Length: 186
Image 1 (cartoon, rainbow, N blue to C red):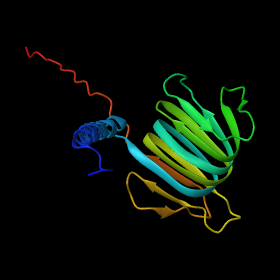
Image 2: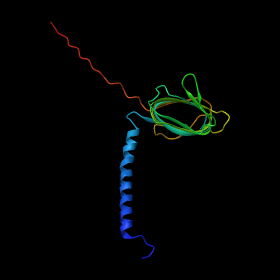
Image 3: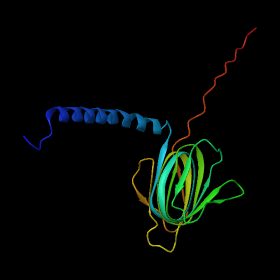
Image 4: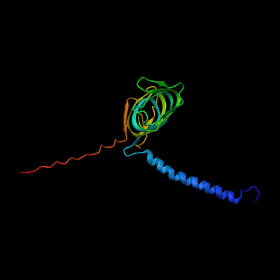
């Protein structure tokens, strides 16, 4: 029996492992349920070349192989904007936007309202969960401008000849208020 872990050590470590695994299994569905609200949709881009603008309320994460990313946060503090991999320090524009340039940019916005503008971009891969709209102008110098999917639909090729306009998610309807009127008859 030399070289084998003692039974009391193995049992204790296995108990700890089981508790950790059970805690993880309980946490994952709760985290996934918290990330989506009624009416939220999904916009996914895969290997997109060209220019794109995304106006949305929700979360976004992704990366871009090369290009310029301008982030506008009209309501500062309603979400965190994280961008890594810029070749140069960020450039702060007069309208409050922040511009990042470089290769292998990684970005994540953890909630709130935002506007992302990609210019001269290659290899945009992103996922947006929330409600919003996107405009994609393909790069006419490449053969394959990438793919997109909206609200869990199938992947579709980005048309190389025209600007693509997309909407995702559904804004919740405003609450309905009813008014009652009474009439009296003489």
